[in-house]
Image (cartoon, rainbow, N blue to C red):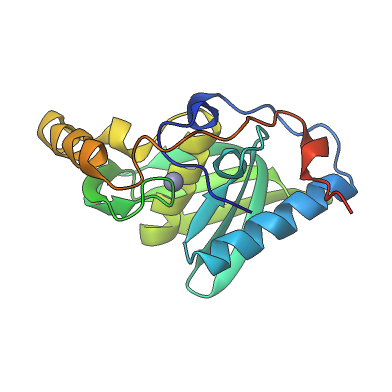
Length: 177
Ligand code: ZN
């Protein structure tokens, strides 16, 4: 699936909770996983492929996973490390994040799951959950870094490309034969 880039309004739109744990959701998780591994990236949230649902996938330490309707508990003093995003290709900036996270949510079958993460996994889970709230990592930067990021975005070759249509229904994840 094509990955939506910065400037696409879907990335700024809070996603809706998943209500139906059905075949369409499983297709969405499969498509997200394939798109993420293909990119390659360590995480991908549904809004990044134009689907406004609270779902993301991750792939950290060779351990692929996904989470639906995540709720996070953060702990520890913020740590700053370089972070990037598939929706802002080629850009990386030091981003503060909590070093530990406990994420509660559901798997694609509707079973409750808890994912505990530190370091990269903790960072990834916070980054992807932000996407579900319409928040991008550049929003978390300090003033100076954010200024650098906005300048780089204006100068990026992908910046200002035409924005594809927003799909708000999970039905749009169905393939047309
Ligand atoms: Zn991202």
